Length: 309
Ligand code: NAP
Image 1 (spheres, rainbow, N blue to C red):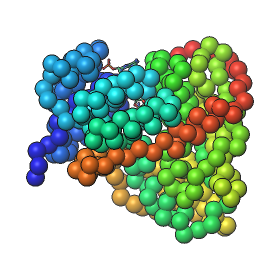
Image 2 (cartoon, rainbow, N blue to C red):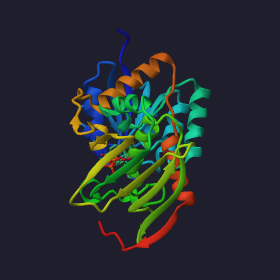
Image 3 (tube, helix red, strand yellow):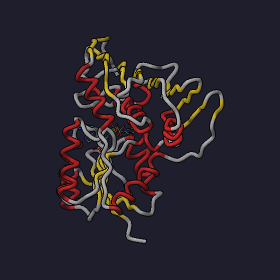
Image 4 (cartoon, rainbow, N blue to C red):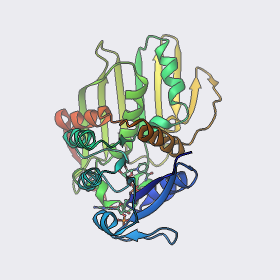
């Protein structure tokens, strides 16, 4: 077995603590060598205020995991790549499509692996859904990604700033699944985005997309759902239907539940990252981000009541 990859991690927030650090600890291919955090610390790991300090004064690292919000991520990712480090980006991979293309080019130029991760693509039932769809002619796809922002994103001010995505922060997870399970690319046909009067990012969005041949794919994203929170994708094919629920982690086909094994999203992503680095490859797909960009570009904007966190 080769030596574990030494990781630096940037941004000690919710996702780093809940998912990345446990997933790294459970994978012998990695060791968490250092952390860059402005406010936090971990007694087990050397911590530095920022990535520049980590890279110049910290222990040697082979790769850097970016767990900060998307707005400051490009500069940090560029710095890591230019220092010859492999990079694992949390989703969304950037605040713009052009930013992701720039990172992909930089990674190629510096001979390092870039993993623009989409954790929902690693949800346990996504590959089953892709296979089910590949064997049928699809009539319609309907997405409902409706959650209570106060429960899941308390105090995350960055979410409401430009580049923070608002309701597209979770909604892009649904887009990452549908772009992975449907065999053809989607185009954004129309969109309506609801912006709180005091915020720079939408609190709800209604999207109409379609396949090149015209199969409709409709999505409803809403941050104001308190009673019936749901993260569902329904696919209709003739008299048959499939429902991918809980963000891709449970599945129902017609009236029957299909039992499949549980596979944690983050442990699976770290196995994938190790394989990419070993193969000298990258995995960068900006298709979900492109759909968000298109929704902002062609969508009608409607101002709704202010959102107070
Ligand atoms: P969070 O709890 O707000 O944590 C983000 C951390 O990034 C902060 O605690 C801060 O840590 C650091 N940071 C660096 N620059 C920052 C800046 N300009 N503004 C704010 N924080 C900054 O956010 P999160 O929920 O972990 O989300 C981070 C990323 O992970 C987002 O892109 C999100 O879409 C993605 N994600 C989140 C979840 C989830 O369930 N929360 C799930 C999947 C993916 P330091 O004090 O250490 O610098």
